[in-house]
Image (cartoon, rainbow, N blue to C red; front, side, top):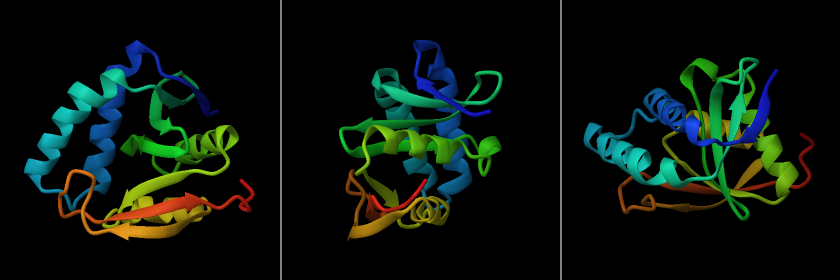
Length: 150
């Protein structure tokens, strides 16, 4: 059974492991240099300070996490071992229960994430040629569809 709970300080090593595993599995478009630079930012700046929602398995092991700021999903990652098992869906359902109208940016080259969000009822509302750091990784700007029944 999947549970959703707020993150705890003890989750930090596992959330970085989840991020690393998920990005390696889905972000083959990143250069190795960009991956290493992002890993430092995620490990040293983002994860230690982020308030996250954690998706856990029956043993309370974190299998995915999500960060939300107001109406925006800032981050959602599922460990490669948990992909397709419902952890991402559970996180989205939880987010919708907190805020029915959500936005999220997804890398255009990440076909798995793009397909996941479209399956979950998000629709594209825009596109940027560069990511938020100015790198050549186009972003799709999506919003949740209030009419989708989860």
